[in-house]
Image (cartoon, rainbow, N blue to C red; front, side, top):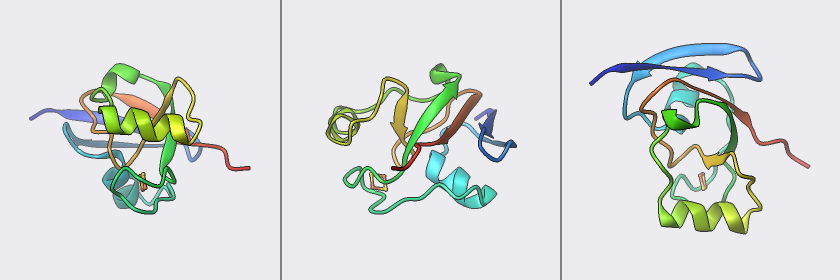
Length: 97
Ligand code: FES
């Protein structure tokens, strides 16, 4: 399995991780502070905005799309607890109200 680069745009931190790793695990290991709740594709708390390299993530599942829509995620939004990396990607936490 190859390695990919994940950049957290808000903290300007870039880490190299194995392909197939979930964003939330990468964030925790890199101490980037993406907030999460259920980790089970339910609460929407872990929503992030992909700012570059959307092809660097596995496509969202039907359930992830449903949760993103329910929590008003934009076109470039993903759930960090669900999205797995397959290529280089840059993201930032979804702005909070
Ligand atoms: S932590 Fe709840 S949907 Fe990701």
